[in-house]
Image 1 (tube, one colour):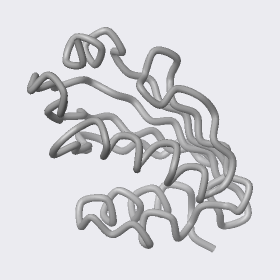
Image 2 (tube, helix red, strand yellow):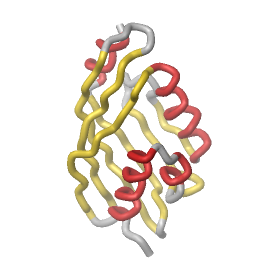
Image 3 (tube, helix red, strand yellow):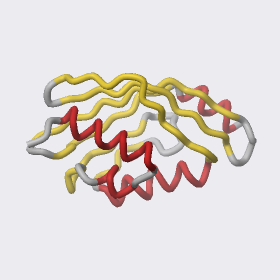
Image 4 (cartoon, rainbow, N blue to C red):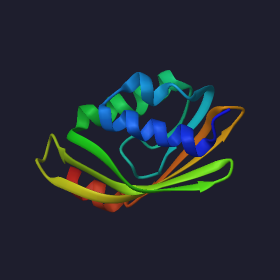
Length: 129
């Protein structure tokens, strides 16, 4: 059985390839995906379909060239922590953003069970306003 670290590493590799199926492959059917309050798609989404619609589609509708760049991935046993940057250009304002972010992932039973994002929502809001 693959570790949480390995599943998250593979998720980020799929993200780099723009491979949605690969990004979703290790999510548990009842994954709880939480985007930080103050972020454009703030809230907790349960299940892959909710994550795709509530997060990925929403961000794609608001931003051009939305990218997460992983700087470090830390193995914390059943958890993994990804540290990096979001970059994008807001479609409405044309303003670019480059925002630090931390993702905290939790896994068990060979599946990703939870995700939580921590980021500088003020910088995101500045790009949107």
